[in-house]
Length: 75
Image 1 (cartoon, rainbow, N blue to C red):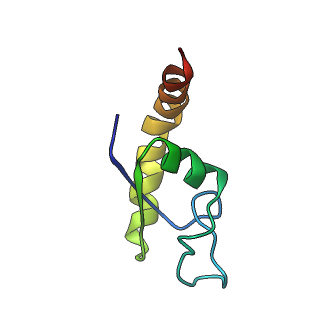
Image 2 (image 1 turned 90 degrees about the vertical axis):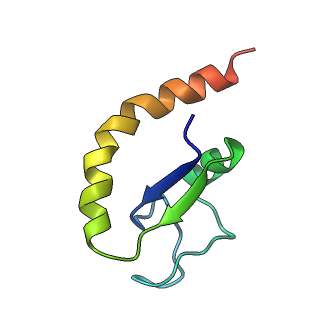
C-alpha cells in the first residue's frame, strides 16, 4: 500500500474555495475521505507540470486503487 498520493488540484481530489486558489484541507472530497481512511497522505501540486505527471500515473492507480480498497474491506 502506498503512503502518499501526489496529485493535481482537480475537483475530485480537492475542494478549492476559489478557482485556481489554495486547496481546503478541512473539506474532503470522496477521494480525500477514502485516502484519509486508508491513511494515505495527499499532496496537492501547485505547478502545471504536475497535471501531466498525474495523468500518466492515473492509468496505474486507476486499476490498482479499487483492488486495494476491495482487499481492505474484506474480513
